[in-house]
Amino acid sequence: MKKTAVVLPMVSLRTTPNSVMETQERIVDILKKNSLSVTDSRKKILRYFLESDGALAHADIEHQSGTEFDRVTIYRTLQTFVDKGIIHTIPTADNAVRYALCKDDCYAGHHHDDHVHFMCDQCGTTYCLDHITVPGISLPAGFKAQQTDLVVSGICSKCNN
Amino acid sequence: MKKTAVVLPMVSLRTTPNSVMETQERIVDILKKNSLSVTDSRKKILRYFLESDGALAHADIEHQSGTEFDRVTIYRTLQTFVDKGIIHTIPTADNAVRYALCKDDCYAGHHHDDHVHFMCDQCGTTYCLDHITVPGISLPAGFKAQQTDLVVSGICSKCNN
DNA sequence: AATATTTTGCAACATTGTTGCATTGCATTA
DNA sequence: TAATGCAATGCAACAATGTTGCAAAATATT
Image 1 (cartoon, rainbow over the protein chains, first blue to last red):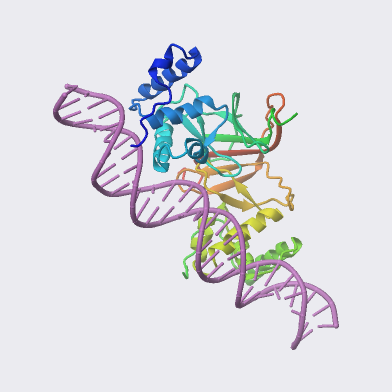
Image 2: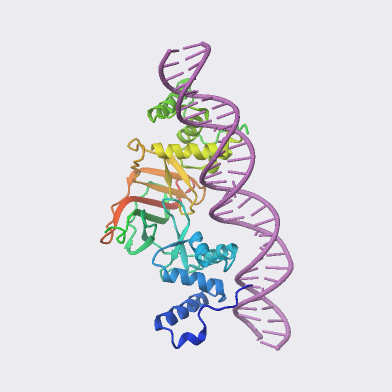
């Protein structure tokens, strides 16, 4: 492994704003609560999600992280997070795989992401509209719903000015 | 690549010469109405959709058609059909691109596929539930909806026995 | 600190999708 | 219906995306 330089040295904790410290703690907390060993790539990738207001695609993370870690590591980390219920995938109209943080009531192997996703056609940002729940759909006889995904695309509030 | 056995007898349509002729005519009609030149690949691919009750992925068509035409031709044909409003893409939970025939009120550059899609976790078939419309979603201030996709996954009526 | 376990990087590969260009096939007009 | 113009196809080469096995490195455990 190449990199030895740490991004956020412990020493800086005193002089760093509280919010940064909180995020760092929160990251480690999430990983430990999910019985995951705390590694640099997992911390970094989880940080991307915590600091992003939208969803992230694999490519986003790959570009942001540069050559810091391998493509394969990103794939495996994302898969691990999905398995643990930390993030969830979002089906989008353009069929590009995107991931976003789960709410607290998701746990390993059991997602509860019954909220609406919004994808801006202009800036490409994907939002989780957590407070809008997916309406129940009455299916034809014999059909049994397991999961319902609702994705709205259009113009978001930032681009709508 | 000569697949002989036909799979689904579901609605067991008696293949009289007439119905075959009708399908053939319908295919040519659809192509001409959309100002597309009538080629073998377009006819064949369009036939796959007309004879399928579910949605098709690129891979499905590629496997079914064998080496009859090039992969690139399939990509371009599907794209052409989407552009003309003959088929539409379906966003699925597994983020695999699937296509299905549009209803009549779709035309070039303007899709009206406000119906629900159902994807069976067991057999993998994707259905267009044309008669179930997507409910209106009230978005936060500033958000403007352009398109709404609702995909339900679970067990379909065929597998639910 | 030593050991056991997990994760990572690398390499090699598979699948999926895109582009340019010469050739082929369709459609149009004479 | 033969000639011609234009669109579609096949091919090759490439780019992007995703998967797997294994040795090396990092993490967790004792």
